[in-house]
Image (cartoon, rainbow, N blue to C red; front, side, top):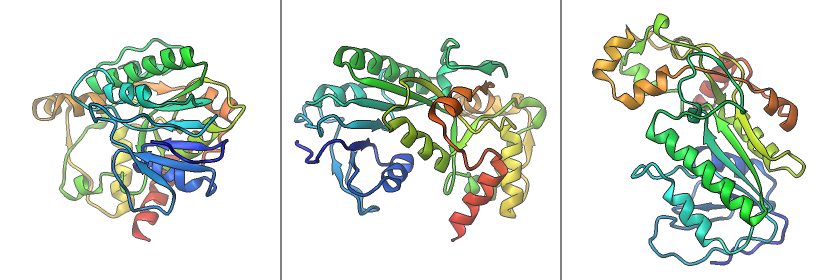
Length: 290
């Protein structure tokens, strides 16, 4: 498959919740999308490519493009076979690849401040797959002489991502005494970070991406309920949660760290809109209700 475009251009691989917002935010004609299935929710050019096909045709990218890769790994392995398939099929070398990873690659830091130079220690298969993706890209970009930026993203929230349905159902939350510091980013601020990372001159490397508001998931969920006019959720202990919740959910809610985002702020120079997560919740609710 040949993707026609006049370089330089940006290619957004994966036009889901975040990727589509990035694509729509960029000037028309400067970016196009590649998605694993056709989409109809944008007037931008998006090509459908099945990365999971056992034998797919090669993908000719626009010359000297910058590529943002947002596609999650498939859940059938601790390796990112989907990314490996994509890299095997592209027939031209991007000038730069920006990859959306997860801060989960650090594992549980028991509330410690966490810098990009701290060791990785993923404790879930989801995070192990993301670390595998980072390592695959590091090797591939090193061989291809392509720049690599890895954005280790904290929990993404925004319109449609506030778990309002769980609140309406009265689903419980872990009580405050059993929760540690939180890390999150509003999707609109994540879009700004992605575009900054794709911009020529942004230094390659690994960046923590979060808003710097470390209030707990307990605080975030209760505040969302209050601002949405919903009943406050019932509370349970961590011990009770471990008895009834999946290990994946418990791990996601109890891994504790404070992401240091100074590098993101200095090197990418991103003016975050929602450093106060309460402002981000209000904006998300307003957009949902518009």
